Length: 529
Image (cartoon, rainbow, N blue to C red; front, side):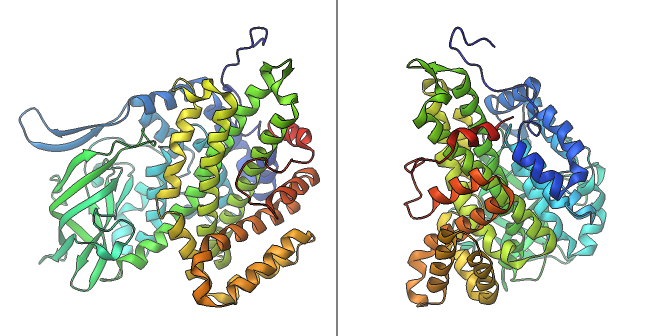
């Protein structure tokens, strides 16, 4: 549009992959087979029509119908049609289950890129997709349970019908873990499971957060005599009747408004044990590795979405006699956000490779560290992007308010920042040789600040264990910054790598652009094609 009136519309109608040079180049190297299909998906996601679907799904959120017209319990959640269209788009791309359906090299990078593109437009729909994907490797360990479900997981057709699993073409899976008295401390679970004569269990109790209550089944944590145990709890029992799960209310959340989260009570609900009795928490920790990866991808997507809106506005809008993007301080701030965005994207792809290749250092050590750091940076940077648009970014008519409200959920879901930092220390304690080998890789960097940070982390991790826990966040931050610096040096432009290292080491690392970003204009030109 013409900028003669100095009014800049939102950035929409562009191919999300075609306009992201860094991601496109990375994908050509890591998963060339995915470039063509994801280019098509990037065009579909970037269209004005999909932007409208995202607005509709978030403005007209889910509603709960507890009872039917005659007072019978139904516990149905009604969604705007846009919600189902977004889920259908995601599933059609094979992003739910293809990583487990093939052994094609680069499949995890392809998944991460597709999830990243989708999350830039609508983040709420990633929640049921993430939980469904993460359930597959857990269920796969119990063949008699997984076999009849396999085709329904791997289907690319979205089936929104309210029906028993046996009648459906595809399914979605949710999670019910936390309770009001325990929160993240799953050992405090009070929901009980009583074995029945047919081998099933009757579940009685509550869940404070029961994610995506419209899912066809949930993985639920309940206590047996042996301790907390994981269960498969479908919406319908084997005889086709509605399971005894009562949805008490939908959560009135800050963000993630398109997606339904709920509080529920179980009244002798039918369930099957999943995994060993009393080993429910380790079973769920395996699942959490996958969901935490998706939290990193989703937060990186929010970072990117905020950046492109702010950069587009700055390129088109005049203030104080010049285009905003030509003003030195604005360039420095935008370039700093661009560096944060690119580093997050490169880290998510490296984590994805670690999952594909089974690298413990990247799966079990770097994933919780990355979740802590990238999710928190998304909160700060989406706020920065909103501020760069001023009042136009703060109103609900635009997308930035939604991005900002969406950002905190990834820091909270699947473990808050402190939980992630402590998980990093637990991973170090379990596999110290893995952690030290990773630090040796970082210490081999040609950049002195990265070497110094890696050496400092080694001293921390091999020092007094009693003094380590208060510095757990410091350890996680250092690991991520070293990893991102190495990735930027290996894969990005010299200008971007130099700028990232110059601004991320030796300072407080907190406020965007307190250190001037070298070659800011060059970085911005490369950020958005």
